[in-house]
Image (cartoon, rainbow, N blue to C red; front, side):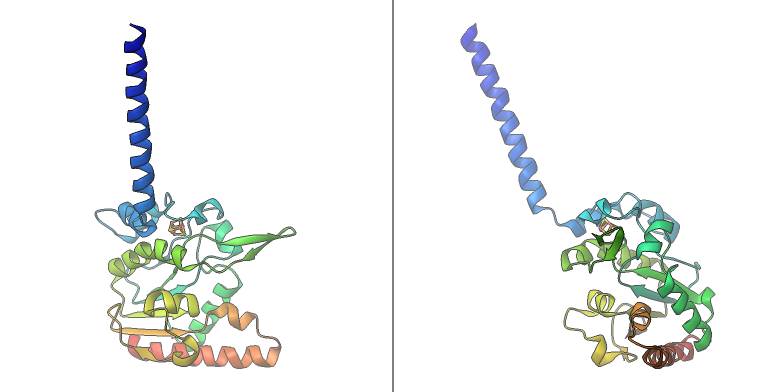
Length: 237
Ligand code: SF4
Protein backbone atom coordinates (compact mmCIF):
# COMPACT_ATOMS: atom_id res chain seq x y z
CA UNK A 1 0.00 0.00 0.00
CA UNK A 2 2.85 2.31 0.95
CA UNK A 3 4.69 1.61 -2.35
CA UNK A 4 1.48 2.31 -4.26
CA UNK A 5 1.24 5.66 -2.50
CA UNK A 6 4.90 6.48 -3.37
CA UNK A 7 4.31 5.58 -7.03
CA UNK A 8 1.20 7.72 -7.17
CA UNK A 9 3.11 10.64 -5.67
CA UNK A 10 5.94 10.16 -8.20
CA UNK A 11 3.37 10.05 -11.00
CA UNK A 12 1.80 13.38 -9.91
CA UNK A 13 5.21 14.97 -9.43
CA UNK A 14 6.15 13.89 -12.96
CA UNK A 15 2.96 15.38 -14.34
CA UNK A 16 3.54 18.64 -12.47
CA UNK A 17 7.15 18.87 -13.77
CA UNK A 18 6.03 18.18 -17.34
CA UNK A 19 3.31 20.82 -17.08
CA UNK A 20 5.77 23.40 -15.67
CA UNK A 21 8.26 22.68 -18.44
CA UNK A 22 5.54 22.99 -21.06
CA UNK A 23 4.36 26.32 -19.63
CA UNK A 24 7.92 27.63 -19.40
CA UNK A 25 8.63 26.57 -22.98
CA UNK A 26 5.39 28.19 -24.13
CA UNK A 27 6.27 31.46 -22.39
CA UNK A 28 9.79 31.47 -23.78
CA UNK A 29 8.45 30.94 -27.28
CA UNK A 30 5.66 33.49 -26.96
CA UNK A 31 6.45 36.77 -28.65
CA UNK A 32 5.08 39.86 -26.87
CA UNK A 33 3.55 41.22 -30.09
CA UNK A 34 1.51 38.02 -30.39
CA UNK A 35 0.07 38.71 -26.95
CA UNK A 36 -1.24 42.13 -28.00
CA UNK A 37 -2.55 40.59 -31.21
CA UNK A 38 -4.63 38.21 -29.15
CA UNK A 39 -6.38 41.14 -27.48
CA UNK A 40 -7.48 42.81 -30.71
CA UNK A 41 -11.30 42.51 -30.82
CA UNK A 42 -13.12 40.81 -33.69
CA UNK A 43 -14.69 44.12 -34.72
CA UNK A 44 -11.80 46.49 -34.12
CA UNK A 45 -13.46 49.89 -34.05
CA UNK A 46 -11.55 52.62 -32.21
CA UNK A 47 -13.82 52.46 -29.10
CA UNK A 48 -13.49 48.64 -29.02
CA UNK A 49 -9.70 48.89 -29.33
CA UNK A 50 -9.52 51.55 -26.60
CA UNK A 51 -11.46 49.26 -24.29
CA UNK A 52 -9.41 46.15 -25.10
CA UNK A 53 -6.06 47.92 -24.71
CA UNK A 54 -6.88 48.83 -21.10
CA UNK A 55 -5.98 45.26 -20.11
CA UNK A 56 -2.83 44.92 -22.22
CA UNK A 57 0.19 43.41 -20.51
CA UNK A 58 2.08 42.47 -23.66
CA UNK A 59 5.25 44.09 -22.35
CA UNK A 60 6.39 45.14 -18.89
CA UNK A 61 5.48 48.80 -19.30
CA UNK A 62 1.98 48.25 -17.94
CA UNK A 63 3.61 47.83 -14.52
CA UNK A 64 5.20 51.27 -14.72
CA UNK A 65 2.52 53.43 -16.28
CA UNK A 66 -0.68 54.46 -14.48
CA UNK A 67 -2.89 53.32 -17.36
CA UNK A 68 -2.96 52.55 -21.06
CA UNK A 69 -3.08 55.80 -23.02
CA UNK A 70 -4.77 54.92 -26.28
CA UNK A 71 -5.20 57.15 -29.32
CA UNK A 72 -8.04 59.66 -29.60
CA UNK A 73 -9.74 61.66 -32.29
CA UNK A 74 -12.80 61.95 -34.47
CA UNK A 75 -14.14 58.74 -36.04
CA UNK A 76 -13.69 60.18 -39.53
CA UNK A 77 -10.19 61.54 -38.90
CA UNK A 78 -8.20 61.78 -42.13
CA UNK A 79 -4.79 62.17 -40.55
CA UNK A 80 -3.09 60.21 -37.78
CA UNK A 81 -0.25 61.77 -35.84
CA UNK A 82 1.93 59.14 -34.16
CA UNK A 83 4.21 60.16 -31.32
CA UNK A 84 6.56 58.10 -29.20
CA UNK A 85 4.77 57.41 -25.91
CA UNK A 86 2.54 59.24 -23.41
CA UNK A 87 4.27 61.68 -21.10
CA UNK A 88 3.77 62.34 -17.40
CA UNK A 89 0.55 64.35 -17.80
CA UNK A 90 -0.88 61.99 -20.44
CA UNK A 91 -0.19 59.05 -18.16
CA UNK A 92 -2.14 60.64 -15.31
CA UNK A 93 -5.05 61.85 -17.46
CA UNK A 94 -5.21 58.78 -19.70
CA UNK A 95 -5.29 60.93 -22.86
CA UNK A 96 -2.65 61.44 -25.54
CA UNK A 97 -1.08 64.82 -26.33
CA UNK A 98 -2.68 66.75 -23.46
CA UNK A 99 0.62 67.94 -21.98
CA UNK A 100 2.88 70.79 -23.17
CA UNK A 101 3.87 68.95 -26.39
CA UNK A 102 0.17 68.43 -27.20
CA UNK A 103 -0.49 72.13 -26.64
CA UNK A 104 2.28 72.99 -29.08
CA UNK A 105 0.91 70.51 -31.64
CA UNK A 106 -2.55 72.11 -31.38
CA UNK A 107 -1.05 75.57 -31.89
CA UNK A 108 0.94 74.38 -34.93
CA UNK A 109 -2.19 72.75 -36.43
CA UNK A 110 -4.08 76.04 -36.14
CA UNK A 111 -1.18 77.94 -37.74
CA UNK A 112 -1.02 75.36 -40.55
CA UNK A 113 -4.77 75.63 -41.13
CA UNK A 114 -5.53 72.00 -40.28
CA UNK A 115 -8.91 71.33 -38.75
CA UNK A 116 -8.38 69.55 -35.41
CA UNK A 117 -11.51 67.48 -36.16
CA UNK A 118 -9.66 65.78 -39.02
CA UNK A 119 -6.89 64.65 -36.69
CA UNK A 120 -6.38 61.51 -34.59
CA UNK A 121 -3.43 61.43 -32.21
CA UNK A 122 -1.72 58.37 -30.81
CA UNK A 123 1.66 56.93 -29.85
CA UNK A 124 3.87 54.05 -30.93
CA UNK A 125 3.86 52.84 -27.30
CA UNK A 126 0.76 53.21 -25.15
CA UNK A 127 2.25 53.18 -21.66
CA UNK A 128 4.49 55.83 -20.08
CA UNK A 129 8.04 54.58 -19.60
CA UNK A 130 9.84 56.51 -16.92
CA UNK A 131 12.47 56.32 -14.23
CA UNK A 132 12.47 58.11 -10.88
CA UNK A 133 14.70 61.10 -10.27
CA UNK A 134 13.98 62.42 -6.83
CA UNK A 135 10.24 63.01 -6.78
CA UNK A 136 10.04 63.40 -10.55
CA UNK A 137 9.22 60.79 -13.19
CA UNK A 138 11.68 61.19 -16.03
CA UNK A 139 10.80 60.03 -19.54
CA UNK A 140 12.75 56.99 -20.72
CA UNK A 141 12.86 55.99 -24.37
CA UNK A 142 11.03 52.74 -25.11
CA UNK A 143 13.22 49.96 -26.49
CA UNK A 144 12.75 47.96 -29.70
CA UNK A 145 11.02 45.05 -27.93
CA UNK A 146 8.48 47.38 -26.27
CA UNK A 147 7.78 49.15 -29.57
CA UNK A 148 7.31 45.78 -31.30
CA UNK A 149 5.03 44.54 -28.51
CA UNK A 150 2.79 47.58 -28.90
CA UNK A 151 2.77 47.61 -32.69
CA UNK A 152 -0.45 45.56 -33.08
CA UNK A 153 -2.39 48.38 -31.40
CA UNK A 154 -0.98 50.98 -33.77
CA UNK A 155 -1.62 48.76 -36.79
CA UNK A 156 -5.19 48.22 -35.60
CA UNK A 157 -5.75 51.97 -35.17
CA UNK A 158 -4.50 52.63 -38.71
CA UNK A 159 -6.61 49.76 -40.10
CA UNK A 160 -9.73 51.03 -38.31
CA UNK A 161 -9.35 54.64 -39.45
CA UNK A 162 -7.82 54.08 -42.91
CA UNK A 163 -6.43 57.62 -42.88
CA UNK A 164 -5.36 59.58 -45.90
CA UNK A 165 -2.23 60.75 -44.08
CA UNK A 166 0.03 59.27 -41.41
CA UNK A 167 2.52 61.60 -39.73
CA UNK A 168 5.33 60.19 -37.60
CA UNK A 169 6.39 62.64 -34.92
CA UNK A 170 10.03 62.07 -34.00
CA UNK A 171 12.60 59.33 -34.45
CA UNK A 172 10.86 56.61 -32.43
CA UNK A 173 7.61 56.84 -34.40
CA UNK A 174 9.53 57.20 -37.67
CA UNK A 175 11.59 54.10 -37.05
CA UNK A 176 8.64 52.15 -35.65
CA UNK A 177 6.58 52.72 -38.79
CA UNK A 178 9.15 53.28 -41.52
CA UNK A 179 11.96 50.97 -40.49
CA UNK A 180 14.96 51.16 -38.20
CA UNK A 181 17.10 52.70 -40.91
CA UNK A 182 14.76 55.68 -41.33
CA UNK A 183 16.22 59.03 -40.28
CA UNK A 184 13.84 61.91 -39.55
CA UNK A 185 16.80 64.29 -39.76
CA UNK A 186 17.33 63.30 -43.41
CA UNK A 187 13.71 63.03 -44.53
CA UNK A 188 11.66 65.39 -42.40
CA UNK A 189 8.77 66.99 -44.21
CA UNK A 190 9.03 64.64 -47.20
CA UNK A 191 6.23 62.35 -48.31
CA UNK A 192 7.61 58.82 -48.37
CA UNK A 193 6.14 55.74 -50.02
CA UNK A 194 4.53 53.39 -47.55
CA UNK A 195 1.66 50.89 -47.48
CA UNK A 196 0.37 52.66 -44.34
CA UNK A 197 -1.55 55.38 -46.18
CA UNK A 198 -1.58 57.34 -49.44
CA UNK A 199 0.53 60.07 -47.80
CA UNK A 200 3.11 59.35 -45.11
CA UNK A 201 5.45 61.90 -43.61
CA UNK A 202 7.81 62.23 -40.68
CA UNK A 203 8.73 65.38 -38.83
CA UNK A 204 10.06 66.27 -35.40
CA UNK A 205 8.21 65.55 -32.17
CA UNK A 206 6.81 68.79 -30.70
CA UNK A 207 8.62 68.06 -27.42
CA UNK A 208 11.94 68.61 -29.24
CA UNK A 209 10.80 72.18 -30.00
CA UNK A 210 10.02 72.73 -26.33
CA UNK A 211 13.55 71.58 -25.48
CA UNK A 212 15.20 74.13 -27.79
CA UNK A 213 18.05 75.87 -25.97
CA UNK A 214 16.75 79.44 -26.46
CA UNK A 215 13.75 81.44 -27.66
CA UNK A 216 15.21 82.18 -31.06
CA UNK A 217 15.85 78.48 -31.84
CA UNK A 218 12.43 77.54 -30.51
CA UNK A 219 10.77 80.13 -32.73
CA UNK A 220 12.73 78.92 -35.76
CA UNK A 221 11.93 75.25 -35.06
CA UNK A 222 8.24 76.08 -34.63
CA UNK A 223 8.24 77.77 -38.02
CA UNK A 224 9.84 74.71 -39.62
CA UNK A 225 7.30 72.44 -37.92
CA UNK A 226 4.37 74.54 -39.14
CA UNK A 227 5.87 74.51 -42.65
CA UNK A 228 5.89 70.67 -42.55
CA UNK A 229 2.26 70.62 -41.41
CA UNK A 230 1.22 73.02 -44.15
CA UNK A 231 2.22 70.34 -46.67
CA UNK A 232 -0.44 68.13 -45.09
CA UNK A 233 -3.03 70.87 -45.34
CA UNK A 234 -2.47 70.73 -49.10
CA UNK A 235 -3.26 67.01 -49.41
CA UNK A 236 -6.13 67.09 -46.90
CA UNK A 237 -8.17 69.77 -48.69
S1 SF4 B 1 3.12 49.50 -23.83
FE1 SF4 B 1 1.73 48.62 -25.35
S2 SF4 B 1 2.28 46.45 -25.46
FE2 SF4 B 1 3.20 47.27 -23.58
S3 SF4 B 1 1.65 46.83 -22.02
FE3 SF4 B 1 1.26 48.90 -22.77
S4 SF4 B 1 -0.28 48.69 -24.35
FE4 SF4 B 1 0.60 46.65 -23.99
